[in-house]
Structures are given as structure tokens and as C-alpha cells.
Image 1 (cartoon, rainbow, N blue to C red):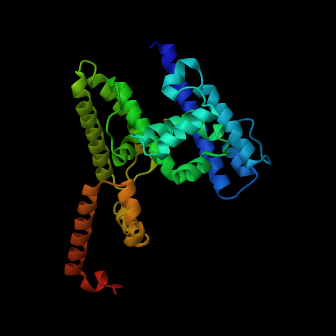
Image 2 (tube, helix red, strand yellow; image 1 turned 90 degrees about the vertical axis):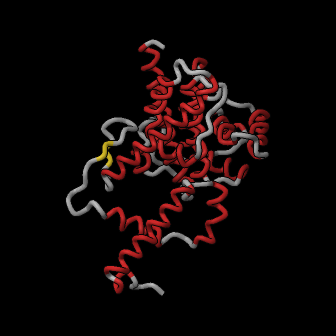
Length: 304
């Protein structure tokens, strides 16, 4: 690919990410039963000049979708973006395949998103489409879309005929660093045999996850800057604040709904690494034991 083609593709992807962010803002507003684009919301959506304060939220969503089509439907990008917009019949057939539990459902859902199945079937928002057709929340659907993008990106980088098996948890960990992992995978698989590709991808993903974890451990509390798109800069926290993240994590756990209310959903969606659950439980037990040894009255306060 020439330098100009690479620059063009980079620009296209950046524009799509910006428009996806605009769509996310609008659907948030729509989900909150807002009908009109307010001045504050309009100021956050300057990437789509057609959106003005006072216009209907549904009209603004349609503007964003039309803007996305300029970047999704160019012939040279049809394969990468999932192909041209679906007809109503095609959208219905794809929706049935997703609903009936076809293999790699997340990839089919991504195709539905990129090829505008919701619009073809008359839905005004993606949120309504996934809720009414599949019983998915908007946030859960976006998690599946992210998983599909990670799988597809790594599979394409390796030259696989299919896509690699990546867990949702691993995909969430590396998605902000996906471009880096793709570069590594592309380099490592350049001369690899087809039967080696899956293992190379898995090793590359695991190494990136370990690197991310090392950064989190070395700098517990992070301040994030956005000096470069999709790159996170971790800064050391001020003295005395290095352990505040532990208190925040414990406070967050203490305010979660009862486990019995969440267990079925957790099993179905596998929102975390099961091995880490056992580690987390042991750590909390150890912490409680150590605190009991040193300050029994403090650690026992409020129990029962």
C-alpha cells in the first residue's frame, strides 16, 4: 500500500471513530428521552456540521449515519467495512442469522452495524434495533462490536482465512492498543505457516495484556492524556495518592448489586476472566485477614 493510500485509510478510520462517538452521544440523549439537540450537545458534535441546536435527535442521528456512509461505502473499502448498505430483505435475513445463534454472532452483528441493517429495517437508532431484535442493551452491543473488530483486525493482519478465537475480556483489554498488536502480528506472521497463525496471534495478545498489566501495577493511579489519538500516557500520581485506587475499588465492590442478582448475566456474558475472580477473592480474604491481625476493631467495624 502506498504512503498516500495509508494516509487516506488512516483518515477514513479516524473519521469513522469520530462519527461513532457522535452517534454514541446522540443515542445517549435519545435513551434519556431527550427529543431535541441542546446547545451543549450540539457543541460536542461539531464533527457533523449539519447538526444544529434545536433539531430533533432522530434527525441528527440520521445525519450522522449518512455521514458515516461516505466512509463506509467507497468501493475500495467495501470488504473492510462490511460491504454496501443492506436491502430490507438482506437486513432481515442477517438479523435472523444473528438471532438464531449463528456462529461468531459478534461478527454478524458488526456486519449489521456497518451495513446499516437497523436503518434498512426502519429503526431510527441502533439501540432500538439491538433491543427489539436481540434483547441486547446498547452498551452490550458495543462490547460485541469491539470484540468483532479485534477479531477481524487480527485475523486480517495475519492473513487468516477466518478469525482468531479471542475472549471478550482479552479484547476489552487490548482494544485501545489494537493498532500496536496488529503491527506485531503482521510482522510475526509474515513467513508463518497457516497452522501457526492462531498460536502467534494468541501469544501476541497475551504479551500485550501482560505489558498493559505491568504498566497498571507500576503506576496504580493514572492520569490519561489525549495528546495522540487512542494512545494513553500514564503519569505518576502525586505522593500520598498511590493507594487511593484500592479504596476506590473496594468502595465500588461494596455498592454493587447482590451477587445472586448478577450471576446469570455474568455466566452468559463472561464479562471478566474467571481465573482473575479466584485471585481477587483470595486477595480480599488475605487483606481482611491482615487487617484483622493489626486492627481488629477497625476491620471489623460495620460487619453484621
